[in-house]
Length: 70
Image 1 (cartoon, rainbow, N blue to C red):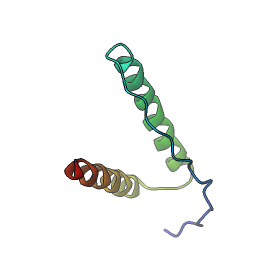
Image 2: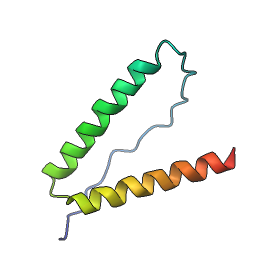
Image 3: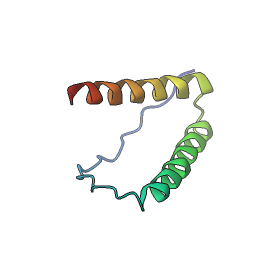
Image 4: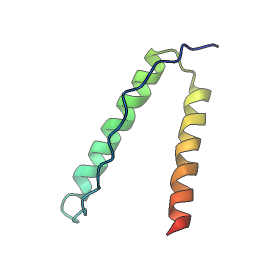
């Protein structure tokens, strides 16, 4: 299924603040909400579950590469 490519708004680089243990549950909840929102948006724009899995796999690959650099 072909999808039109849209120009995304550039994401500004932001330094991640140090997370205290008190704010960790709030971040986990925020990530859960964000992931549901992204998934819903992708599905509403015609992306198939298989394409979303490919996106998630690519993100995991990038994070894994980043962790291997440390």
